[in-house]
Image 1 (cartoon, rainbow, N blue to C red):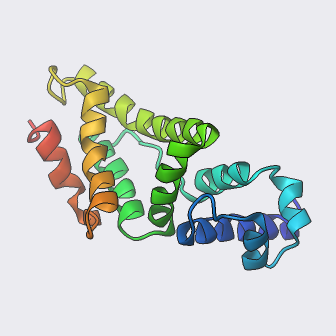
Image 2 (cartoon, one colour):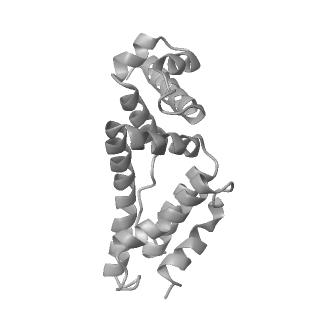
Length: 185
């Protein structure tokens, strides 16, 4: 890809999150993204046909979830890595400022709900798979339901960001994992 096009795309994606973080979904406009990114509105539409396509690409591109690697720490280390990433994203990032707008929009726009719920499910699937592997290897308790455990791990992070004045600090991954999964064997 031409480096100028790549720079323009990156500027538009960063501006997308910046604009969404400061507005509701309904108040989000391509015009403001173009102005913030200092690109032509036609350039935005050339790459993204709708505001939801632009937002989806920004979330997928600018918030890369770590890929768990088999490590000496096993499933717990992988779970803590995923939680640390999530906690950092919700503690102090422009992404966390976009979440309330997306939650609100999902209530009123079925296409946003489909995207947002699918996006969340895909990201949660990584955590579910690591928990399931930990159960299978005997590292995690056999009684755990991997899907429910993943929801129990993610839930406090989202709750603290959206329902309280203080997000859960980024250094709490290990403590959260112990609370939900129990102490390491």
